Image (tube, rainbow, N blue to C red; front, side, top):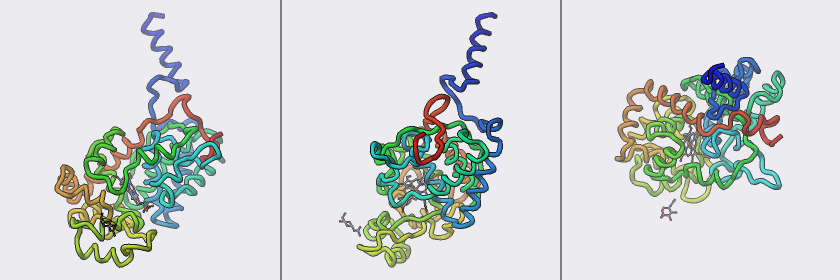
Length: 317
Ligand code: HEM
Ligand SMILES: *[C@@H]1O[C@H](CO)[C@@H](O)[C@H](O)[C@H]1NC(C)=O
């Protein structure tokens, strides 16, 4: 064989073994090894969302909180052990992240037909897509082939995930550190068109801030007083909290963002024009959201021989 052919052959072998240096995710990853994986996951997610609409929000957020900490490797699903303090009790997740049970259910169902093949990290990515679609959001082709981590880190979760009072500059830089643009950040924040937040996370906003609609602030203060009721929920999108639409952006223009970081996206800064754009053009928002979710799903995956395919999502094999 001529030299270039030898190189091509070796490369082919390596990629078949999945250990090419820049192993890529691929939407057809399970086509041969577990052709029923995607429909099985979809059935579980649809059922969970039809039981509780908010679950769609919780599942999208779970994928986000996974991907920003060590990459999309299902680290968030690892339970604490005597030797490892994981991410579930990190400040942004404790008493806040939800949907773990639905992911475990999907994993259990997938394991029945293809034991040991489909990673928990991929299940999180597919669940987020199916959750979006199930409440009127966009769908997209999910890239697959992520593997699961053998570690998780409370410290990393607390340093990598955005805090609820970050400035716009900090938000832009936190997302930029993950390869996501300001436009991606605004589009992804648009998932606050669904789901709920707890009083202690927006208390300062509704009692102390001035860039807020006064009627909106007083409505919210009724169930979120200056002290007490820390866990009382309010919808992140006051108009249509159960549908994935662009009302979130319309709210921001009316100074009715619930979190400080929501209103920061439309407060006289560089992202105002993106918010205005999405408030007028729901199609652009949905299309950019899908693109940004695919980019987010690409953050530092474990591939090839890295990590493992966990047998159960809550523990290392
Ligand atoms: C830009 C920085 C972000 C900050 C500071 C932030 C912060 C928050 C906070 C404080 C909550 C409420 C949690 C609670 O009350 O327990 C929340 C909820 C939520 N976040 Fe974000 N978030 C951000 C970006 C994102 C992104 C990028 C996504 C997804 C792609 C996302 C999806 C969600 C969803 C869907 C909910 C509702 C969850 C539910 O109802 O269970 N967020 N976020
Ligand atoms: C309002 O801001 C002050 C000063 O930062 C703070 O001490 C106080 O706790 C805030 N009030 C509420 C209800 O968050």
